[in-house]
Image (tube, rainbow, N blue to C red):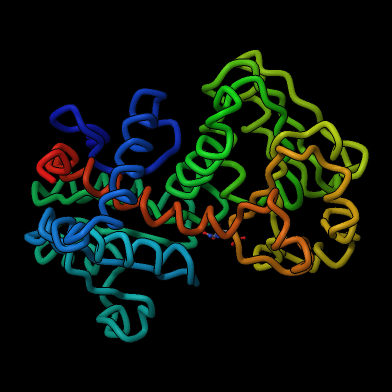
Length: 332
Ligand code: NCD
């Protein structure tokens, strides 16, 4: 049996479906508090003392800049020591060791493993194997192929939550997800997470070949959530509260299918942004290519750089939760 929850707290963090609203609120409050403490005298020193006895392995065998650095910075904020494996050819896998044995080694040295791997389901499989050994440590999914990216979803919702604080929160808003929605795991996970909230309107704007996957449609239908599929971004822009942009995920192409798409229709420049509501927001998990022109960056609706920074606080909050240490912040 895989331990998704232990002692009333999340243990392995695999899927956005593990986060219900009260837990999300707890994490958002903790992230707010961490941010506040870092700005106080000796705040950083105090935070570093909270988990200074813990060690994390950052096992990132699929390319990553942001998520890797964000987890690294989050660990540093709360005092966790880190080590990393990013290129398996430099580890004993080169000598023929299985990936499973390699990961099992980490559980002897580290207190948690943050894992990004191109194979969907690999994190869950490793969590199951580690639990079966009786020498398990929590695994946090940092992106599993085209499948899921739960911590990205959390930081996306944290950013939406903060942006909509004076507008009644996440509810009763119109959300447009734009781009390669079939293969973008950030969108998949964020939609799974957002689907818990009532009174939201979902619009999925994508080339026909890259519209949302059937399982996500089934999920929304099962919950009775209505959604619109569209190919016309400009038409929707004036109505939306949140526009979530994504890049073309052509690393998953099987035979150059991305080449067949005019992706410029799924992009924003300042002229298009000016058609949006004044208090709407634009998110992007980054990295971006041409889908948001840099001239948009200075517009107050662009929150993607803030989203990046929020991710570090949110991931630090998640680590405190997993190690049962969030209450220690009250000592400050
Ligand atoms: C996303 C990812 O890796 O899925 N990036 C990220 O984690 N910040 C989005 C992407 O690569 O397009």
